[in-house]
Length: 70
Image (tube, rainbow, N blue to C red; front, side):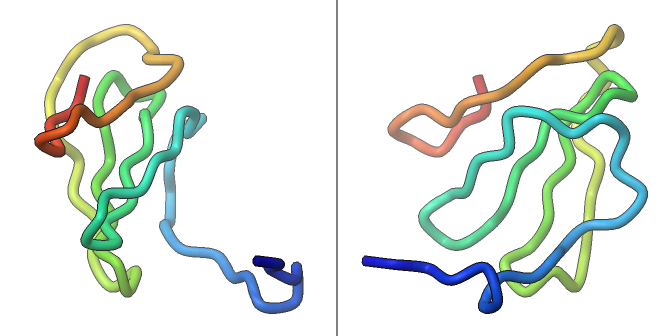
């Protein structure tokens, strides 16, 4: 499968140093947020939600087999 750069777009706004971006099976995008949390972006990009208050600056995230953030 090939994906052209022209077919790609941007989603998300005002993210702080997002690293460790990962996608869930339902198309939800999760990104570590430099404000000490994770940001959840719905599949169509229409809504963002900051989740958690970990403090510090996370360098990445991952999802386990059940879709839980780790």
